[in-house]
Picture 1 (cartoon, rainbow over the protein chains, first blue to last red):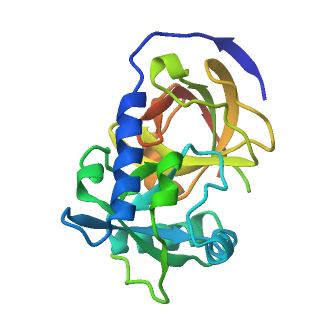
Picture 2: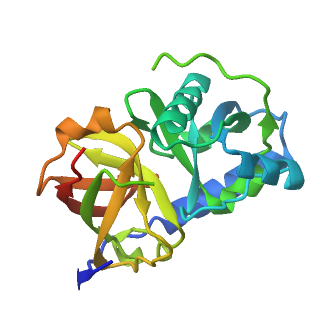
Length: 143
Length: 97
């Protein structure tokens, strides 16, 4: 790998927004079932991540990203699992469901990937506030 | 895993509202945005570190190569997304397929 150069710039940091997201998820996790609305998120996990969730009961980031990617639809997660299975030759995936406060989701950007996977990134610091639920099925993806 | 393309990529620094830490591991997965459309990809790092603010030449594998290949050509600009734009770069070349 070849280093070709370096540069820098000066833009604002989104740290305060990140703190808001982490605090909101933590509060909602403590008060689950309270008044504020929750939104379901979905994630397709590989066997290694599934084993980690089964062992720890939480989402932990095992990769290089500074957050975890979730889909806002079950079909999106299913589409990712199908495409990753064929495209990356990954082992079969398992569908995981969790919930986040709707107010948190409204602070995050959603990016549609590969035409059918609406994706959102939950920062690592907020992951302990999420409760993963392992499912035994996938919906059929449209793509 | 065989790559589909070679790219020049530079991750933004924290001062640029980029990542907080260098990119490490065997590979780095993220959406690759070109012409406003996003496609999942993996940067094949083979254990190399990508320091923030520096430019590297890296092989990349796409999840759905037929979907993205027609949009890529030498010199094409792209963005890597991790909940926000974390890197920019240009396509160096496409692998022969």
